[in-house]
Image 1: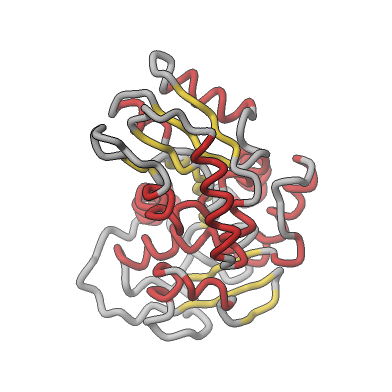
Image 2: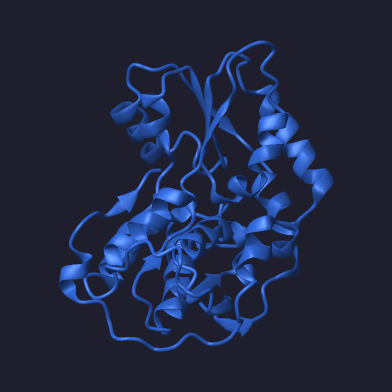
Length: 276
């Protein structure tokens, strides 16, 4: 679940690990964007999107949105757990700091400077130089597939990024869809290659661990795809197909998912959220 198509990164990562997985993509085009909304409003919208997904009886609910994780994760877990494991998406600050600094965290204005993000920086990057870089307009441009607006937003964020950073944390799931454009906008000038840290692979792996469905790359590629737009079943939005992640998801059949048995409590024992 996400406000928009930022969920493509995590969903495609799950598809790569489990080609047979039935996926439900639940987003909220009627409420886009979530970033400028109050925390209370974001929580209400996230709960509605989560309810739409939960009605399809999934094995797990992946909150594939940093803003929703920052503001709505406790409410989502209170509503759905323990029957339905809820996996949040945390900016990959910890692995970025392990790799050494200085580093930059690109995020939406709503997430940049938030107590949640600042606490992650204190916990995992206390001894590292960290620059928080707000990226106004970037997630909206990615959502719309607007190439020119994407370029302008990335260029503006690149100008706010110190030249010597060793790595960049992609603190919004939308940004992972344009990772190579972000890399190209930050020339190295003889420095070591820039490392980009997204959360999708770790979130996908954590989701499969929580549901007790391990990595099975050789499974038949017959997983189904159901798209819910503000609760209404629909086709994948056109802009999603401008990204490799969206095209990957459409390679399998697109139909309603098969109902399966609920996850056994023991399968949801380990882990609460993933940080990449």
